Image (cartoon, rainbow, N blue to C red; front, side, top):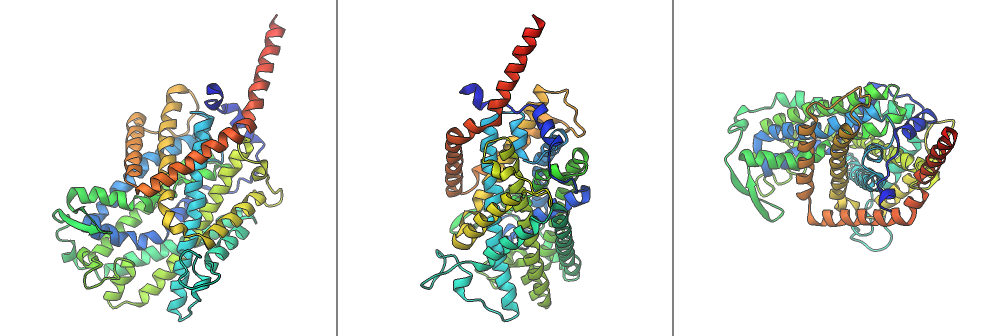
Length: 503
């Protein structure tokens, strides 16, 4: 048993999968970059800036974004090297399968469900919130029973989050038509939301009061957040701010799930991973500088003169500046922008399941490719129904931290796996290599463990319970169904025949 759970998928098997793949290679480097940007920039940029400035770093929040960006770079570089070696769908799952064994690869693949599928559910619920807010701006109010899951509904009788349900089905209907069309739609949405972020930056420049940046790094003091006091500001606050806003960067790894549809994956996927991360880091830094210049960080106090500013800091900053109309643009941008996040999340989950199904670890239905569209249609339909139903009837937003756990776990394992592969197979052709790998890998490992450790206890326990369930499924089903059972048998027969010939 020990040898079977640690068995690795040979590089020759990956090469065979690539040759017979039915996915259509239609994504260039800029479409891949747009997928990364589309996944990273959501509504969070318009919310986390306020909480990060008030509860952690003050105007020095810009430095927190720099630190968080650098922390992500460690994982991004490791992803890039793997993408250059194994340009296949499956992301961290596939990388682990070729380096550290089947059991850990399965656990990572199962954990990625937390990042992509559960992340999709959370984004759908968030989109519903922004959509309802947008409708209210135009004096349209949907009844509560159509916008609330049963657990959150304050009335009696039937209720569901209908907007969350419908947006998932809409996105899936677009994805099944073909990756090229979905990529064009994503490109369009990314242009819109990046334009909105640039609008905030450029328009906000005219309302900056540089006095709000002084002192840029405030003195350390105690701040209460959700009833718990902690030290804020100073160097400590900058670092804790980096941990708090780290999750605004989650999503760049979605680029690696599309490697099977990239035109030149060994070069374009590493480029897109790093490029999308750098673009978003620059935008985040500029937004945080503009916001803390428009409003003093202390004005985001939920018990102060502007108690609602902490919930929608960017819109509120423009409102105080006498530019209330800007709130409409920001709300529209967040509503439209979240559609591309949802699109990339569902697309990423379907490709991870595609890779796992090809290897026999989950039912083969997830590996079927429609010959006309070149997409895993049935895979997407199954995911769409599950994600839409859970988003509509479950208070999934309370479990958002589980998404972060799944992401950080994948980052951690990729940092370990790329190091293992460099040591065990140093001669593999690599079009991209992580510089100073031991240092980068160790820093990535330590940072991801630190951030997982700082998640809520509930999120840690729920996530570990999810992984434990995955291990049970592996031993009951996946281990017996794995293609490597047949691969090892075929390999041993071939080896035996060769020995007979030699005799």
